[in-house]
Amino acid sequence: MSTTLAPEVDDDLWSAIGDPTRRRMLDLLLIEGDGTATTLSQQMPVTRQAVAKHLTVLDRVGLVRATPAGREKRYQVDDAQLARAVAQLASVGSTWDARLRRIKRIAEAIQRTRQD
Picture 1 (cartoon, one colour):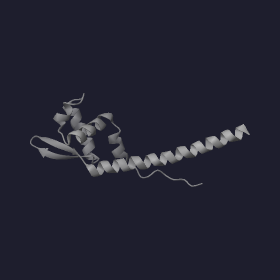
Picture 2: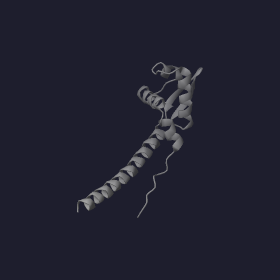
Picture 3: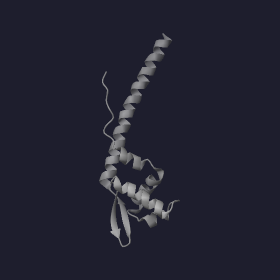
Picture 4: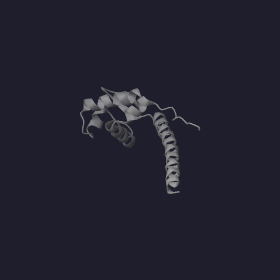
């Protein structure tokens, strides 16, 4: 029996993406092109301080890049890091699809055995 391990996954990256507030912020940045903690907080049900903390997490894992803009920072999604996250998700998804197909074959074999 061959065992295929899941591809290397960046847990910090997925932990950052796993938070619904941060996903919404990424969505907004992708739609708007860029934003500050202030502009993002105006579109979200959290404070500016909370948005700033979430942006720090996204910046730490490389999903956004900060550029100084006066007293604030403007954030943009890092396309390369987002593409890396998408590739990891696709790879993990295909690994799980293969596992589920194997489980289905085993379950069908058990069912056939019971029917005989």
